[in-house]
Image (cartoon, rainbow, N blue to C red; front, side):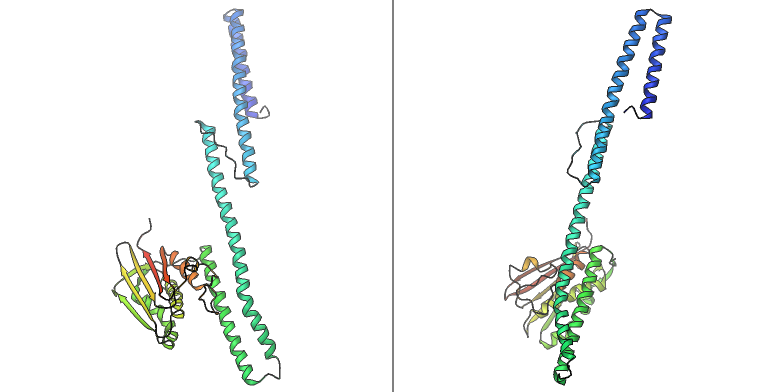
Length: 334
């Protein structure tokens, strides 16, 4: 404490004032008065010194606390729940510590998610890469027949397109996770949205001779990003088409109220088991009824796109009874 220049100056002033008081008491008073002033001055200086020492001890304690925080220890609690400037400072430091702890936990979770994502991506890419390497080796054999060569070449193209879609989807998901995608806020007519989402699926729908019934007011609309929302609906509809038998039916209803715009997509397909239902929006999750070509990323992307636009999506399903997707885009988020 005495190493601090301000303390040295403070004590010097106190001693000077005390000596001045003693001198004045001796000149204008008596010896007893001088000794009284001297004693009172010593007591005041000692009291001030003890109080200052205590404050610097608390500050030194806070300094040690901050040092532990800088070393990653966020479990300390320096609050004393009393009044005063030091108590207020302790409370503010504790609040900062709590925020740092939360940010540290978030960073740790992000690292775990990144590790898991890399592991999942590696696993998803490993299968088509292995298949392509085997077919490439076979194609290099001059004794391979023309029919087999054509078949392997076609399979190579299929695997390449699958890998291209997977990498593209993962890139979009990573951008959404990082918050680098800015979703537009523009008026979207739901009828136009649904028509554009169905368009890429018309061929598989026609092949399976499935019916589509669209119901709703043509003027129903909401505010969002058209292109991204189309992609979300494509993934949901694709899932419905794949799990609905030939000759099956898809029903799309949409309504609007003062709170939200709702889109309901229903199929009469194979449905989703109760065990799979809580997990279908998780990345790389493949349910019991998933096809061999599925990588478990389409519904996860749809979920991310919808929720990133202040929306919500729920699913209800029973095996062999079909599946219903409830999508809501809220007018305002409080």
